[in-house]
Amino acid sequence: MSKTAKVSGSVVAGFPSPAEQYQEPLGLRLPSKADAFSADILDLNELLVKRPAATYFVRVEGDSMIGAGICDGDLLVVDRSLRPADGDVIIASVDGDFTVKTYRRDKSGVRLEPANPNYPVIRLRAGQELDYFGKVTACIHRFAGKR
Amino acid sequence: MIGLVDGNNFFVSCERVFNRRLVGRPVAVLSNNDGCCVSRSNEFKALGIPMGTPYFQLKHREASGELCFCSSNYELYGDMSRRIISILREEAVDVEQYSIDEAFIFPPTTAAADYAAYGRRVRAKILRWVGIPCGVGFALTKTLAKIANHIGKKRPDGVFLMPDDPTEILAALPVQEVWGVGRRLPLKLRAERILTAQHLRDAPDATIRSIGGVTLLRTAMELRGVPCHEERDYDADPDSISCSRSFGEPATTAEALAESLAAYTAQAAAKLRRHGLLAAGCNIYAQVFASGGGGDFLGRTVVFPAPTDATNEMLRAIREEVDTLYIEGTRYRKTGIVFFGLEKPGTAHQTDLFDDTPPAEKSRLYAAVDALNARYGKGKVFSARHSLRSACSLPHGSRTPARGGYAQGLGARSWHMKRQKLSRRPTTRWDELMTVR
Image 1: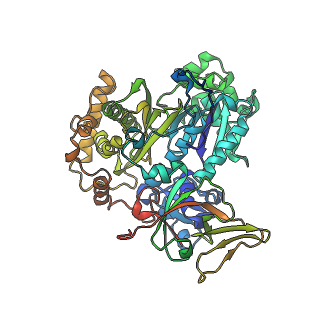
Image 2: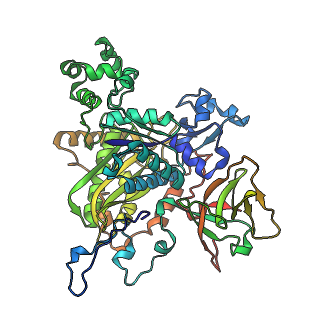
Image 3: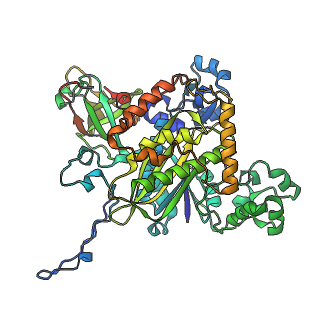
């Protein structure tokens, strides 16, 4: 799943090559129901959850990220295996509470930016380490009967 | 080379992933019914409060804000455990889960150049992906790997590779701390002047045999670097109540999967009763042959309505989940079950008001079942009424909704369990997700 060792084989043009020359990537794959019925079922897990062991779902409370399209009650897909890069939407803990914000990192240091002018930017104090939880990889917004 | 990976203060570490206020504080997780401390943070240990201390003795120190407590949230711990095992399955050639927070791993040949570096990489991956700090130990045998793991856990990088000549380490290790020696033997060992692991390793085979039979001799052989603990049920060790087997031929049917898990549940439950323990729940798992040639891991966590040692109650609780492990067209390599939340009955456990079988009668029933099985062979006598096969062959329409039905049953029956400090189950329940602002 996470690691896909690329094994490249060669195919001789013009001649049918034996089936064993075609090699599947040696990646470890969970067989999903999608494998058995790949012709007629699309599984959202396949699309949204690349690494099940590292993936967590969290619920949004409040509108601090409304400008990024993240609304109160939305469901976020969070991947802990990904390191945060400047501009990523992440989950981190600030003073013991989890928050969703845009991660910013430059010469002035690390800060967490809301996407709503009513909320303050969170700056890490000198020597304070970011208590990072994971990177938000998707936002699921339901239109009716949210919960 | 064999590795042993285990989660540090596992239950507390699981709680801390989702409750950051617990980080850096003295925290303990309590047994079923909030009885006593079963997992302690380093800060808690540093206060000198031993494992097993009853909660009521510490309540006043919680009120003053000095100590923090959590009720045991086995559904969460089981899920975190499954995540760790699935990572190990990606990183190792084979994984043998030994208990909810411990697994033996067989590293790939590519790790041979530098086992410590491999261990650090695996450890870092688990820490980042799941948030649980682990100890990792490598050695030639499982018994030595256990010792290496204890040393690794105390090191800043969490990893220790047993040196080719471990004499110095074994000389410093009291013999009763060796895995498998048990608490009854040290007196007899002392009589023979076997006080350290080194003494046991170097004692004559005949002496060892006369003290602890072939089991102790195996332990001594393992200390000598000769692997003797094949995959087995670790019968003498009540810390691990588990059972797993590889299929002779890859299994491909739902029946084979269900029957194997039912049989292992019955075997593991018998061991539970032999040790006079109840289990709060279990992880069931199946390893499959994946298309790329590697293996993969499917698992489910089941928390029993109340702690139990009754095979039929367990089968009833796991049957729906067993069904969800089956995927058509998949070749299964191995199945297994690991119990968790083990405790002696009667301590803080209340009787189940909805169970019509009086406890005494129930234990007589299983005493009889166990006696018959001991006489005529494992698994000859089991509960037909609740056999998984009949449960799994129900037509789809007549089955209760997989999760909903079970969850409702659990909710209705578990109200009397005292779990006042229960955290949420943010990885297994949609209505208990972690919230972010």
